[in-house]
Length: 178
View 1 (cartoon, rainbow, N blue to C red):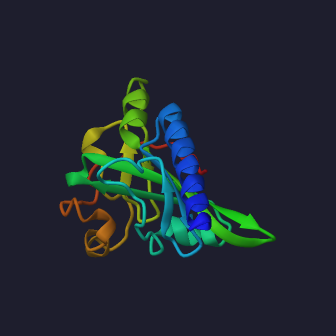
View 2 (cartoon, rainbow, N blue to C red):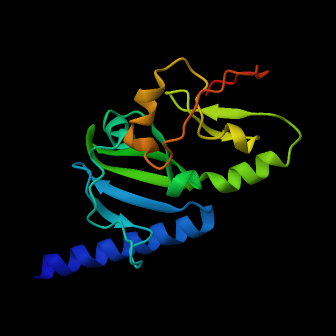
């Protein structure tokens, strides 16, 4: 009973800290997972759609972070109107992964700021799907030679089954790899 109370006080303290950091940073959600991918603390702990106890073990960003690689992943929700980028990093003790911290960033703010500049740009994921660009018509379309059906059947793009390949007109691009 005493150890459960101590755990709950610790979890509450972490939740409040994540909530404060989230509010300051402008991210959508910051959450802490155990080594199995279950969310144990979250900045949205007090909300109806809290991530507490959700399982993210099958997400690419979790899998990358467990290998001590910076986890990165793009997804779109609600017909492509809500687009997010996830970053995740492992937490280690004695060289063993004991947890993962993840940050969900809304791309809408970045798009708004970048579109104010007078340049054309686009950012793609590893499938060649454009998830961030200066031209709204390019968003959530494909510029690679990947089989379009593979991309369309990927649950990551479930919200937008109208993906198409943008190769009818040339796009003058300057590549930046990061």
